[in-house]
Image: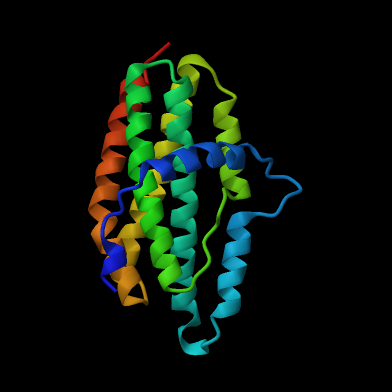
Length: 202
C-alpha cells in the first residue's frame, strides 16, 4: 500500500485541465445545487456498516472529504492570488500554493480510491461561499482576504492531519496523515508570513 503515499508530481496536462475546470467549479453558486461535500459524506456513510467501528471509519472518511475540499479551495485561492493580487508577494505565494496543493490533492484522491471512499469532485457550498466572498474584494483588501482565508483553511488542515496521524482507524490513512503533517505545517507557516506581510497595507 505504500505506492500511493509517494509524493505525486502533477503533469503539465493535469495543470492545464484543472486550470480550466476548477474556476468553473468555484464560480458555481452554493444555493439550489447539490453540495459536493455533503454528497461525498453521505456516500461514505452508506458504505460503512460495521457497528463497532462505524464512528472511527466515519472520522477517517470525513478527514479525506474535508482535506480534498480544503485543497480544492486552496488551489482556487492560489489561482485568484496569481491573477488578481495587488502585491508580488501574494502573487508569488499563490503560484506556490497551487503547485503544492495540486500535489496533495492528487495524493488524497489516490488514497481515497484505494480505500473505496468518496471525495468531492468540486467545492462544497461552504467553500463556494467563502471563495465568492473573497473574490468580490479588490486591491489590498483582496490580498488580505485571500491570505486570511488561506491561513484559516490551512489551520484546519494542520489540526486534522495532526489528529489523524495518531487517531485514524485505518493504518494507511494514519500513515498518510503522519507523512504529510510536516509539509502541511510548513505551508501554514509560510502562509502566516505572507499574511503578516500584507496586514498593514492601506
